[in-house]
Image (cartoon, rainbow, N blue to C red):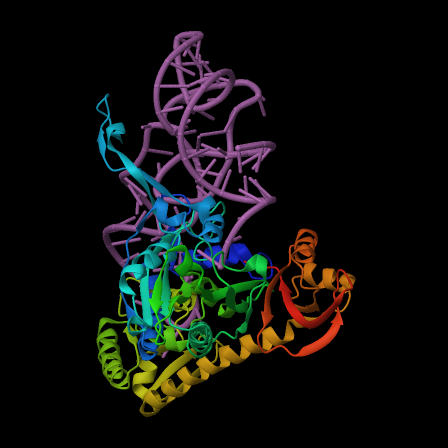
Length: 490
RNA sequence: CGGGGCGUAGCGUAGCUCGGUUAUCGCGUCUGCUUUGGGAGCAGAAGGUCGCAGGUUCGAAUCCUGCCGCCCCGACCA
């Protein structure tokens, strides 16, 4: 095995290779689609479990709506249609038949659907079409529903996890009796996303509001959590939308409030996707491969036996099995790799590539000395300790790694969040992919578009915790009351 | 959809301009021996409709025609 390309020499080649080598995913034979391999899927399952239990704690319940959406449903919310029409897969027929020449199958023209079906790019349409039937009174509200599913958006250019034609996600769709409640819900979910991404994935985020042009078509307000990758590009890691009454009006979802007055229902929607996997990789990993936060690592400790003879092998593996029991009893996820078909050096490199937080090696010398060797993935530190301290050391290290990689990512983000007060400086910073560039903006879409056309930088968000600070737009010199975050983005 | 490029073993490739024995090399795979505390060494073996179809020719991976597929760059996007 040759080493990975380095981040410094070719970041995107590094990313692509790493995803393949770490066994996370690979390209499918269907253009733009990916096969998520068991190790990659195990990480996704960890994320799912964490998010899902957080949703349950906030009173949300899971349901499932169909993959197919009648075309007529999609046409009902104009802004929403405009946003997705260009990337929808359409089902037109429901049957195949044997080809005339006997080779393979062809679409049976007789089986044309009367109404074409759209493969969901998102489910607002079908869900609000259903909420119409579920909601009559304020007593039916709120509805706090979530679904885990796949969606399809026919993308031109795709990259594993970052942008694929089909991807997995979670979409929450809530309905409320008041504007205030819906607004609070959208913000609640944004904060929830931030907390999990920070506390479990060890990724610092900036919370903010999207500008008109970056807003979800169909939303009144789109909130985002923005993250910064090691190459200085930004990545949107999650969104929460306050929908106002737009979908309720489009699908005629009304209710009678406590005062006996009919009103349209207020809505939100919010989601995170398999794209988070891309963020995870690009924030923490290094030139030796993946680096995983212990809290979401499917395997936290991998044990590698060292031996020469069969007798030594048996003795070492027996001892490792004992260690494994001790660690499992502490709730630690451990794998013992006792394969005799691979050598230790190979295993060391392979598990580093897979980002396993701690490696434990045990050989004949250790058996004699009653010691064990531990190696940390994030710092590469290697220590030999008395085996009696194993559980304590592993527990300490798992905590230390979780916090260290977060602090490292936070420091990088802070260091790469830079003020620009004039357009020349701004352009230099953006061209060098400096990171998040905080600058004044006049609030117009025109200026935003011109800056994008000239520099490829977009406004990632108007930060929620940003301070009022009078200034002048870097492009138009018109007055501005606060800074926004610009960056090149994934 | 515009511009460029590529299809040869599981993967990466040489050969193609200038047609000529059994299609090259590396990685990986398999077998054996030696190895095993940082991606092992040696010896041997298996593995191919040279993208598909047609044509030119005594002879095509190589030349010609058509088709198919993929990749890269641009417009769109979580």
